[in-house]
Image 1 (cartoon, one colour):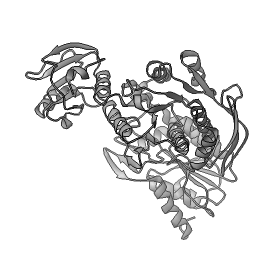
Image 2 (cartoon, one colour):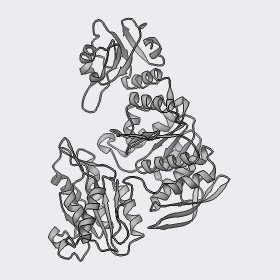
Image 3 (spheres, rainbow, N blue to C red):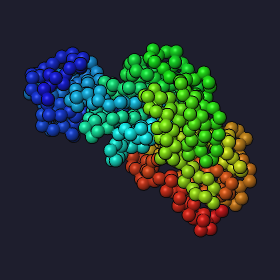
Image 4 (cartoon, rainbow, N blue to C red):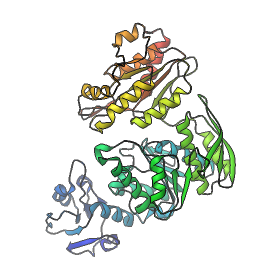
Length: 505
């Protein structure tokens, strides 16, 4: 493809060399550059692409795009200085892959919690309506019967455009995409043509990156202002940040929530351990839905999916059948136990708000005790740790604090910070006190996650509820800089097997 064509729409500040030649491909990782490619130097969290320009050229790059003023032109290659390398990468990818988002219905889902579940619901609804659906999100990227690991919730712009082109060429008609705040801030999604955007909610998360809730909100808002444009926004009308968003964005809006003032709301709601029954009230529509998913927060996710489907003109019968067909979402209040065992759920809740919502919903079905196993990730927002400790201890009968993904932090230091949020006067039990006959409300500390899960399952009576929170669908644990195989669901099943065989109880 002609380099001059690739540069359409890019804010170029200066050029050294001839831009009339052809480009064979685009790369932002110098190790992936090939003969005749264009290398875009972007700045990441740990590495700066400008430091790898010469490596890219050595591997065959014939053109370099950069935005640092101090960067020096490289002899014998075309050097292009731009105002923003990340925006340039998005535009280059869009041009190289012939703007694939133009040829599909693209749905963006953003917010702190619920994104993954909403994408699964919409995928099921759209498939029920006969469409070919692609999904990019936290669990994986998938389309056409194939699945790929998801290193990021939202891929880098080059990877995203390449994947969308593959989807379009493979016959995909609709793509549902989780849009993370990092992806918005790092301009991975700029240049994409969304048909609709969804705002689920906002609560404390990623403050190690965004620093304040106001900054976090402004990033989310920019998706609706700068990317979505005049296309419809589906907004949680009960969420305080959603209510603020309604006042600050100028785009067609459909609201969802529990109140009848929302455009899409429920009535005749029944919540149980067996799922959700409700009637949906929408613009010119009223129809029943049923779901095997548990809890009020999942009703919100259903409302978000219904509001989106209605805005896209999906018939009611396909909305109903699609919601009913989705039995579970990996690691999202996923029940691992079977009949005759205590209900054991695995959930991805790794923020205070998400943990609170899950525990409040499980409390509605409580017959005896709630036992919660949880931790906090290392090298991430430290400010949320005390709050999660406070919530878990307050809403559980027994909270077992353990490791999550400690990464390069000391797991015991993370646990200390979690424990610091637990109210003074709460009873801390030794693990051996729990196994010998735990009686009162309190908490304990078991740093090894496998041992913590085994303890929770072993001491649970059949009428208790066990929640293992934090990692959800993840099948690994990050200790130091290495990933080790670890899946909460597998570990729970092992513990349940031991329990059935007469292990410690």
